[in-house]
Picture 1 (cartoon, rainbow, N blue to C red):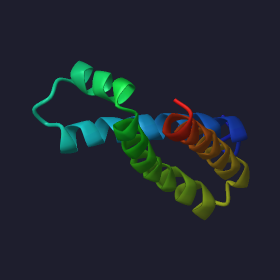
Picture 2: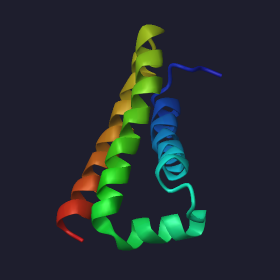
Picture 3: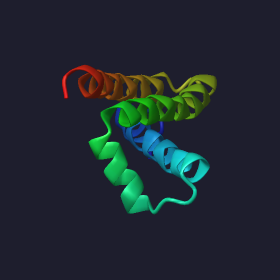
Picture 4: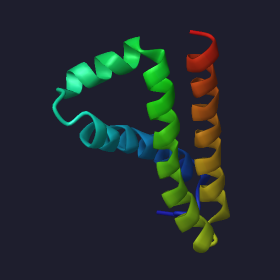
Amino acid sequence: MKVNNPLIGFFIGLVAPLLGVTVMKFAWFKNEEFGDYLHRLVHSHDMAFKVISLSLLVNLIPFLFFNSKRYDNASRGVVVATMLYAVFIILVRYVW
């Protein structure tokens, strides 16, 4: 399978922040159930804005990895996924 593919980078760029959200749950909300944590994210837009924004930092890891291996197309996929998350963050912050 060809790694230098924008779809692979896009998929990794979409999944990595979800792992970041999970890590933040265990770092900040240790005593809270995962379902309650997700409920708070959905209903508290200010908290969702902060958590999702910070979880995007996880996308630096695959971006820098693909960049160091000269997988430019995969790096572009990660950047596009990050931009989609950025649009979502703006919608959460200012529209909803």
